[in-house]
Every structure is written in C-alpha cells, then in structure tokens.
Length: 338
Image 1 (spheres, one colour):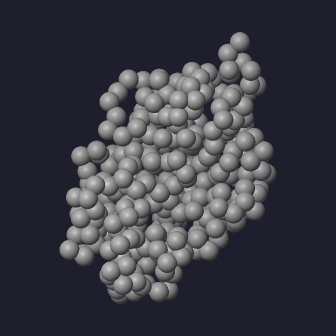
Image 2: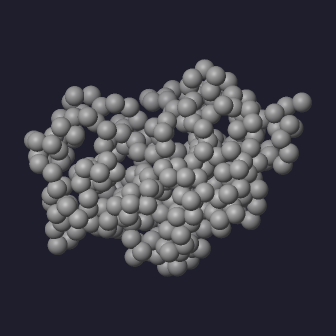
Image 3: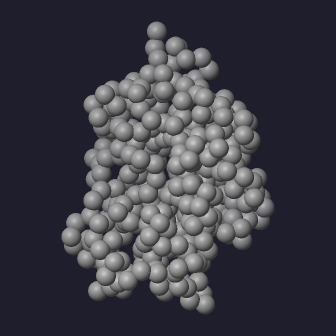
C-alpha cells in the first residue's frame, strides 16, 4: 500500500516547482542554486477563480497552466512527491515544505489532506500560502499540521490592491478582509508564525510599501518581499520590473523595520514617495549592508526561493545564498553609498 492510499482524500496529483522536483528526485535538470524548501501547489485543470493581474494562474490570463511567476510547476503523482519529501528530509536537503494554493471550491479539503499527509510521513515544518475564507479554514490547517501560514496582501496599499487583485480587477479579495484574516491567523498560529507577501513594482510608492511593512511588523506578521515579474499573457504582462535601486531601498527599509532598528516614521521620503533617508547614519547603514542579510530571500525559515523573480544571469533581486564581497560592493553602489 502506497503513502497516498494510507491518507484518505489526498489529491492524486500535485504541482511541484521545477527546482523542488529536481531536489526531490522527480526531475533531472542543472540547478544554479538548489531550493532548501520543497514548493508544492494544489493541482486542478482549470485556472484559479481569482483574477490577480500579475499572476499566470489568474482566470483571465492566457499563460500556461503550469506557470507561477517565472517558474514552471510540472504535475507529479502525490505519492511520488511524498516519497521524495521523506527521502530529501532524511538526507537534509529539504528544511521545509511550502504548499501554495489556487482558489477553487474544494481547495481547503485538498490543502487539509496534503498537509496531513506530509506531516504524517515527514518530520519537517510545513508552511501554507493560501487565501482562507474564514477563521475555521485557518484553524483546520493548523490542526492538520501546518506550522506557519502565509496570507498574501501582494499590494502595499488599498489603491494598488483594488487595481491589481480586488474590485477593479474583478477579483474576490478585499483589502480590509485580508488584514482581518491576517489578524485571525496570528491568533490561531501564534505570534511570529504568520507571513504575508508584498510585491514591489505594482504601482505603489516606496512610502506606501514602508508603511505597510511597518503595519505588518507591528502586528507580528512577517512581510516577505517579491519583485514584480511580468509574465506574457497576464494583465500586467507588459509592465516593467521595478528598478533594482528601488528594490534595494525597500529591502533596507524592511530590514530596519523588521529588526526594530528604525521605524517608518523615522525615515525621510520625497514628494513622490521615494526613500531619501533611512533614519540611521551612513556608517551604520554600510555595516548593515556588509552583513548581506537585507538582500537574501525573505520568507519563512529555510526558504531561499531560487530565481523566482529573476534569471540566474541577473539582475538578482533576492539572493538564494550569501553574497560575495563584489556583490556587496554592488549593493552599496545601487544604494548610492559608493
């Protein structure tokens, strides 16, 4: 009897990011950096019922069904995926499993079953990234064995939220409800066990992004940064990625706010909302840059998310590894310190 047969109602198939599939022994490809988290995604033939303008899985997009950001997510038999996770965890290759979910009527039944199966057979922390409908959905995922939950805001302001994934995009999401669900998730999972995604480059100002990062941190919600990645066939497919210097400024602002070094109110902004002052000395800022921490992938512990927003040839927005001295010097130049 296989692993899936031991778990009732587990979907027969699940999507796995290509890099994760290589680490799990399900695919053969050369990796510039191996993921330390196994990234899974719920499978259905149709696309998501939501309509986020940046997402290849949106119901109105014309992209391949196996794409998310610039990463391909081939479909695999769930039993094979579970076995790969068990073996990779034992070998120390995988530190976490992250299960991402589309929106469709039975998604929480599928999520609950997948989380239970992974937690039953592998001694590994599990993160779930999803759009819960209510408090009970959140509680069920915690009871099934999820250690963390991510509820993505994606946008840094109500204005951008409505335009890219809310009412103006013919989407089901509400700015107020997302914050309400994040608060409920924190009550259920506990402080520091809830995260959200923020995408830089959707049309927000740096000031709006810094304010939202501050609000998250004040609520004990971990904000993880992504760079907008245009995918042909999506509503925002012709929009450019954010300038790298802008992304670096927001990475620094996130680091300072997250580590309680400075607050958003301590920072200076131009009339157009650009960060002009981080609220600390240039010497202190230079020392922080040399730690390289602000520039590595932000997210759950054990998440390095290699090349999710970029090609290996660069420019690299989120580094999946420690930076070299040459790269750190480049960070200083991009931030106007050299």
